[in-house]
Image 1: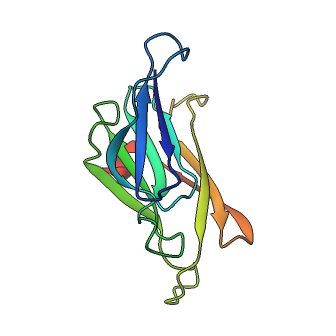
Image 2: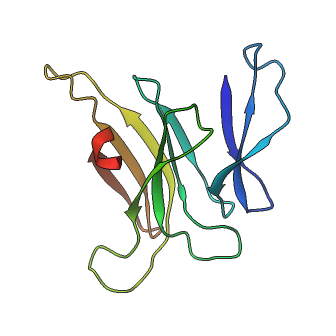
Length: 139
């Protein structure tokens, strides 16, 4: 069992492992992904790959942009595939908004078994935005 989390130092995303269903945890270890003390979301896909959605900046940078998704095939030890979900406002201005508090889900209830990935997040603290994509899009 692996848990990913942020820390109050706002520099990196960390992880810890448990071999007893969460009763005890390893000492936290740092990942290569930055964190600015904003919410993150990890999700294990049906094929075992791990997704991480996060703001791709550390605590010295503001605002909460870009919102990035990363893909790992080694349980989060490395994140070779990363793609920005949102950088600027939708009106294509240079305004950099705040995109945060992501939530992920993978579906497979259709006859085609699409395995699409669904992401929702706050859009500039005004509304919720929804994005749908697949694993190939991240790569």
